[in-house]
Image (tube, rainbow, N blue to C red; front, top):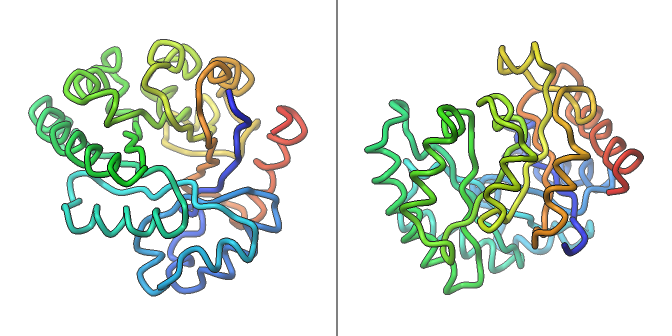
Length: 252
């Protein structure tokens, strides 16, 4: 495995990246993250996405979209942003829709495969990001996606919290699907908190991150992105705790 770069998902800052993107980047850089992941919308008013990132020595780990609301136009825009900022990953989620149905998974798998084809032509990898819905029933939703997409076009972004929430071991899930895993979301929660869809800083919950990293070690994964959807602390405080855990306990 090449050295994992540690990124920060900006979701924890809520709407602030849309109104004060550079201020958020300053906080991310001060915590020694190496890059960010965000929605394409944060770049809507930024003609040169590389400029604010490069000035802070940050990379663009990836952009994240909902596959159900995506279109060729919005996907092409995201690919353009990634190309300009030298990012390599476009992430999608939500393939099961509200119904979490097999029909939705199959229909959206076709879209994922098509978007993966478009992305590959531009040097970008499409990854599917799981929530708990794709993990329940022995990862039934994930298996439909994998069966209906090409390994050359669609990889997996494994979210450790949601795998555990869905009843499986994140490390074992990575081992089982290692040939398709291309990106990691490091997210934590306590056993009780996971039942309530609550989140906590890395190392404070029930996810076995040493085992996750051991499982990922043989794989060619570029980014491990810290994602905490919500916090009772300030975003900077919370993300500082997670970064410190990775550095001090896992040498990342």
